[in-house]
Length: 320
Image (cartoon, rainbow, N blue to C red):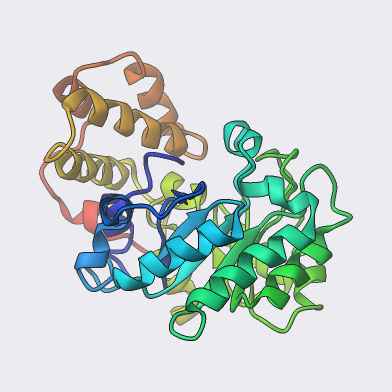
């Protein structure tokens, strides 16, 4: 998801009621305090109330392994107006893990606790510190220990991706393991992983016992997933499947926002990256991706998406 989830994406995905809060892409922390421009690049909402344009709060995420450097940068984030700091112990990327970041810390719960405790000591009295973990690095034997370490360090909330680092994104997600963790912690636990549909949402909640879930790839695959869940919780009614025209309109809006600051070749790449997520769960998106994946001209790509001028079906979903 790197590169796709930015302020423009957060704006588009929160325009309809669904999300309670969002998180930035991680700010990579090594051994020094980063300048304000780095934080603002990842989280331009710092200068706009630290919410999306529709008012959904945005937490700033840090990724690193050095407790002192993490604490220093958390203080910097606080000075710039951050309303919450999230710590990423879940990233499975090989490059990140080779450089001692993300899920690599899950091999030693003491390191998780030290990182969270340092950041909590720096900012915890003023803004909450939250964390995200997986069920472990290569096995699940330390899953509960890592979760307890985050809580003991001062985390106010814990998101648990229901797979180990070595399992990557291969199904299935082990939501029942998230439930085992939840039963032993006092802080709220949020379930994450393989929530692509309303049915997945309910199964994740049922097996984990968690009240809340975090959406990632599922929200890119179906930009109406969070509103779909919110509508069902409020009314008991299921919305119809998101039509292609609505999906294409989101991609076209994304392109319009991105091309104000990025070269068109980069925007073209980002559109195809998002379309690649959509094709995993939608036949028409898969067909369009195959037809357009080698297109390098932005206008040609947008024409191939086939989104017309805004129509009612681009903005509303009917009941199933």
